[in-house]
Amino acid sequence: MSPTLLPLAAEPAIDTSATAFVIICASLVLLMTPGLALFYGGMTRAKSVLNMMMMSFGAMGVVGVVYVLWGYSMSFGGSNIGGIIGNPFDKFGLKGVVGEAAAGSTVDADGVAIVDVFGADVWIPEVLFVGFQLTFAIITVALISGAIADRAKFSTWLLFTGLWVTLVYFPVAHMVWGGGLLSGSEDGISAKIFGATDGVANVLPIDFAGGTVVHINAGIAGLVLALIVGKRLGFGKTAMRPHNVPLVMLGAGLLWFGWFGFNAGSELAADGLSSLVWVNTTVATCAAILGWLLVEKLRDGHATSVGAASGVVAGLVAITPACGALSPVGSIVLGAVAGALAALAVGLKFRFGYDDSLDVVGVHLVAGLWGTLGAGLLATEGGLFYGDGIDQLVIQVVIALASLVFSAVVTAIIGLGLRATIGWRVTDDDETAGIDQAEHAESGYDLVARGGRIGSASAPDLSHDARHHDELTSEGVKA
Image 1 (cartoon, rainbow, N blue to C red):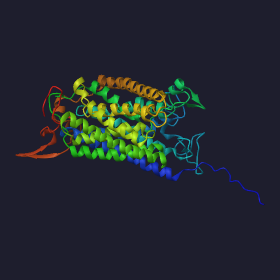
Image 2 (spheres, rainbow, N blue to C red):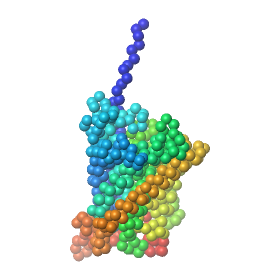
Image 3 (spheres, one colour):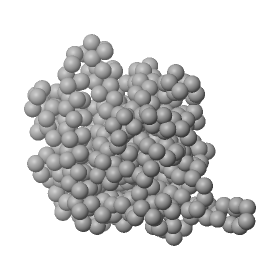
């Protein structure tokens, strides 16, 4: 009998199916930002629609450049500075990622730097992982813009974008996903509380696709900025309806479509878990629509189109951190509660007097908090409702509060600094006439009235607060 020949150990190689999957998912996530521009743009007044959309496109421009230069290195660089950031110079300009691989990197047969992010022997080009993460940074910053619609200088917004993504987003991404304080590493908070085994925390924080990094982060930043920038002229006195509801619904549809890249793509492979994530994302969102509409019907007597579109976003936000840890039935519960909570939360700005124009706080902060905490209740492994004790819920509370406080404090420093130097607000005359004309010398629509042509800046004010069609304030100001 001839001896059995054992094959030589294969060198790591690019998994082409996973690579194709992540390329598609990254493209879907990038589509979310133009989708958000449509969603937010439809909610504003006609005289502000272009500025609102430009804030999303401006975020794409600034963050895309910054992420390649130092953002990836700060988020996922090899060094871990205090558990808060990676060294921005380790992979500055994607040094060692593109071209000659950095020392210690894993490369394929062609010398391309490749990564196996989850240790599952699924290798993709590191530069593709950069691209995928870049799209997350872009959408997070763009989300904040809805809190300060109609009144902020575009130049100040662009400067804020670069500062905030550098000083807030990249550190939070590193802390949660890059092996920092809020991760499952042996040096993280979870390991300090519950211990670690073989270098991994015994209780792993759950944030599959960005409940803390994206939604809590952006939501609390939106609240802080709304307080710093101040209220729109006429807030609480003048009706401010969304000027184009079909645009809102189209934007919500594009966000939902792109969100599959956001959630399922975070598995970085087309496998059983990403398939479960797809289903969980879908059913949670469906349930959130129903939850939001039920609250509207009971409270206001009407189920609205804007409510349905907003329920879509609330459900997507809530399921984002938990999508890989729940069952489909648990996802339905999570989504239904998220829709109801967000529908109730959007009215808080009238009660407390802060002008969160497009309800970034009510949707992203509230639903993001619920999704992060809900994972500690509904996770099939570790969840309190599955009889696995309170440990997972404790860690979820810790990472939610830590990211919220960090983002709030640093955002306040940035926002106050910009207010004291170059200023946030356009002039009162420009805000009244229309920020599109003042900031961009354009109008969203050419409207024709009797006796001649008028631009959107002088068109009748068709807008109203996005989710309050009949009552503007708790004092009963009518549309």
